[in-house]
Length: 199
Image (tube, rainbow, N blue to C red):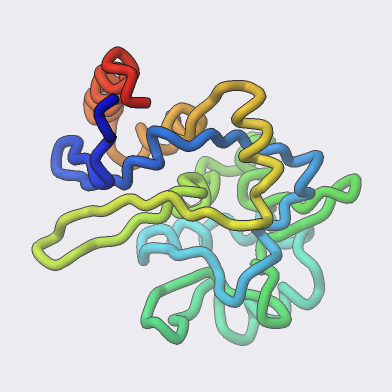
């Protein structure tokens, strides 16, 4: 059997092959939304996303904790972390300021408002794409990596049970980021690998 190369190119995007090979499907009832709480920095955001988030603040404000409201009042919805990346503000060095709780589940207040029809902005693309992490290299080349994290082990098991791979689970976020034509090309690459029994 041929081995799948570690890096695959689709259009102008380089992606690690485990995005095509690894199974993944979020299981919120099992993990309780830990990805919004664990970690030492917020979610990466763009300046455009910061502007959209600020436009949504009135719609989500009452869903935020008093601590989160205080952080936003003091430093805004985002800050520059130690690595120089613009990220969402966090509470107590870990929780994203936009976390809210419902029936013991940690939810995103931004996404909750969007689903309720109160706003058009759902959540930062970095959140929507997780467990894929995006990086821009010199020359403007975009790279995508699968980020394996212990808090998502339930999602891995759920993906195996459903036979759903990372790129399939993230179809809509990938289309949002790179477009339908790019995603169709990605599917063709994956189908060729499956046909050749490489994955």
